[in-house]
Amino acid sequence: MLKRKLLIMNIAIITLTLAFIAFSSIRELQRLMFKENTLSYNNLILQDVNELQDIFDSSEDKVLTICSNKELHELLETDELRYREISEAAASLRLAVGVDDVLILPVHEDDIYYPNSMNNGYTMAEEGLFDYDIANKYTWICRPDNKDCIRVYRPMFSLNDLSRIVAIVSVDYNMPRIVDMVYSFGSGENMKGKMFFLDENNNYILPYHYSGELEITEERETISYDTLPTRNATYTLVHTFRNNGWKLAALVEGSSLYVDSSNRISFIILLTLTMELLGIILTVYFTDRLTKPIVSLSDNMNKAAESETYKHIDVPENVTREVKNLYDSYNKLADEVNNSIRNIKEFSEKEVENQFMLLQAQINPHFLYNTLSTVSWMAANHQDDDIQKIVMDLVNLFRISLNSGKPMIPLQKEFDHVRSYLEIMKYRYPDSYDVEYDIADNTRDLIVVKQILQPLAENALTHGFLENDVRGHISIRSYIEKDHLILSMSNNGTKADLKIIEKLLNGDEELAKKHYGIRNVNDRLKMYYGQDSGLSYKVKNGMTTVKIRLPLEKTREGIDEQSSNS
Image (cartoon, rainbow, N blue to C red; front, side):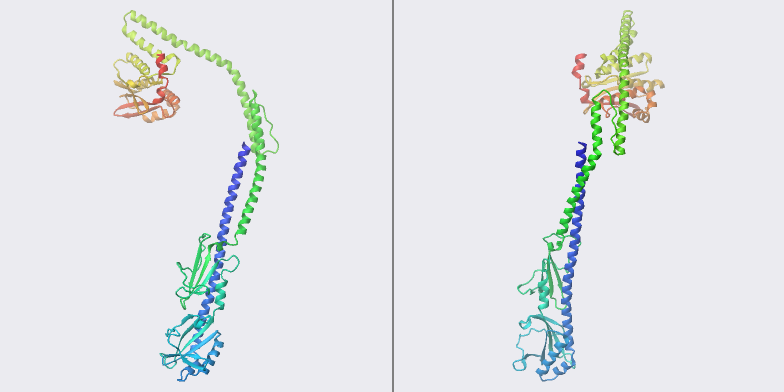
């Protein structure tokens, strides 16, 4: 039984400990992998954003470089549209600034002219062909003239008159690099996500097969790794470019942020199971080694208990110090028990003798009781009423005290007993006190421990007023309060010292020698009725009152039996 319980307890402790460690490790691993993958996504997206931002910034710088070209200004400041020279200058500038295409549209008298390669000249642009916002700023458009590129343009002002526009200058940047950027996102190993290139109104530019508008409910530029998301969560990361209001949006699936952790989690679980198995094996081994001598001791103790004497048990070899002490303690205890058995046998005969002497001692009260009855009969014959009355009270006192050897009596007899005592004391101390009795009718037949009122009455007489020559008044009552029987005794003598009484009731041995009766009553009440019962004292309005509180249910036990004996 001991071995099985220890095994179960130790295995449970090992299992719970390893499970907690494994759970914590897996949780921390997921957190680390989430943080690592989050940083990877954030860096990848930031890299694409920076690359696009560089394209936008450099394209605007190149437009400004072209607009600052002095030779081009000289060609455009004339009234003649010099197609060949302007085209050559545009081609030269395209190579110089390193763009995919340069387009220069001369402006004369607020009319924009578009190059026409068919006639090697310029044609005035049809109204609405170019939706150019002519202002001193950069303007971006996507796929102009159905070309797969993005274009940025701005007006070129005359050096002689800064309020006059002499041309519209634009540069084109082909889409393939941006296409690769958008389509390659989420295509890597363990990556799950999509990237979108949007205009300022969230309309799709890339991928090509998307059309319409992307609904964006929340804009964030990076993924936070402070809290772990659920695996089915989706993050929308949006970066808006300052040049044109266009956006690069990335949709990242939460499950992809936990990748690369599955194999490691499997390793942790396998390692935990291996450690669990090893722990169980070691637990079984050490538990068996620890409990085997203890189980052996228990078996030998059971065998020894079946014999009349307890024999020594040899200590096994290679046991711990604690187990050896356990064996030594048992052997020492066995010696003490054997000595006790011998002492019991030696005193058994004396016990029989003591019981006989106790029975013999009980003859004396009976003899005194019978003798007093004879004295009472003789006093009656000589018409001495006082002697007869005091003797009868003494006879009644002894008769109730003996109570056929039973410790319990009806409450009415207990009242008769204390009344006889107080009547006898009146002959000794005439005109010293008076007594008032108030016993409730519904309490007379209740059964209580005998001789609990007389010691209290004796204490009230001795320490209440007899020592002080004060005529006293004693009031003795009984009544039922809820589920308890209450017995109270009050006197108007010297006020009781409640601190001394508290020490006495709490076991002060020195005070018990002087007030043995109170201590005896309190101890007997607690012994029979429990620790909640006993004596309680209080002083109020010059009266010292002691109360006995007894459980009503227990005072009703044995009423029928006592009635039949009466």
